[in-house]
Image (cartoon, rainbow, N blue to C red):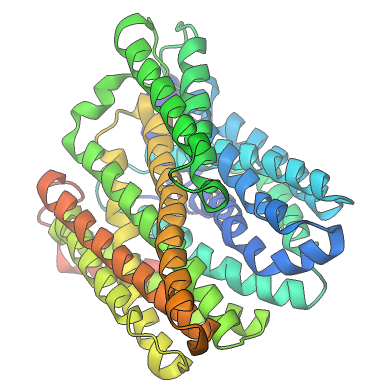
Length: 504
């Protein structure tokens, strides 16, 4: 087994010797930073009604508490990832943590709806810096093989379980000390991580420090992604066929096409070197991440509404309902960290996506007067085990095809794929669900709103299940079977690895 300190991975990335760093401490720190960002995606949802009452949000503006964060986060991920490669991953991580913490403080102290929306945008920018910097630090710290598989197993548990944990904390805090604490809870975490980073992490950056900055590429890709996500999050208000939505989608496509042209023909030192897509595994993994984001974001949204609007759960009850989901993801991620060395990421990823799809198909059978134990819990268990099996191999495949110098870019691409997929999925599946709900109410007004809502939700779950199967097909066709495999590893080593994972 590997020792607890490292020199070579960061030394290769930075071009100089790195001080000895405790890998376990480094892993805990970057996962803590990522957990803060992931939780913030879902912790706000349960507290939205309280925010609306306290700050006098209109129904139209309330969505921007979520959308302002999503918009800036997705739009600036690529820029944040490349900046980490060029300026130093540890330095960018610390800067992102401080910015995210400052935004959280401003959110908690907000006295008006406009102040809260602006502070959420600051949080999104901090998150766009933290996520790629944290994952790229992990990839340059842990070499491919057993060490990276183990580290990504922990990362996958954090990434998957954090969303469910956010819903749980959101229910507890909003119904307990109040909605402002869904933001204040970030303050000790962010400050602790920022203060510990210089002691626990070594600096690493792209060896080529002579390169100039691709300003035009940065402007076009950031504007293109922001406009794309903006169009997606506004489809509930304006519709897919509106002049505004179509115009925004066309504008986004033009900007992104211009970005690709700049990177391919004009940029001497491109923000996103297109050579990174020569890796079929990396490209395929990002398509899978897009489809997974498209699937899971909307599923959490629908399930939370089903429990609160149909089953009449309180925010705390809805939050704690996700505990088995979180546990399932953690268990499956730990098991995946052990299995991926023997079987590689390809088959584990395919299996996880098929299992996840089966869980989503179970959700299509939710009744109007459902029971948590008989209707929701079995689907939760199956879906969470599948999702837990997905995150580790998907992340491993997405970063395996990139050089150490491009670690931040590869990490940012993965996060961008998931976030854009989430924005598209929530808009698309919400439109599908709302359309059927409206149709049922129009044709059978006496059936009641809960019946119409359930009809829409179950249609959304069915479409999500199909997307998960499509992701499995993409993985089968694109992912290399050798990625993640550790040949001829003695069984004793796997027992040691399992024991370490359990203790972690």
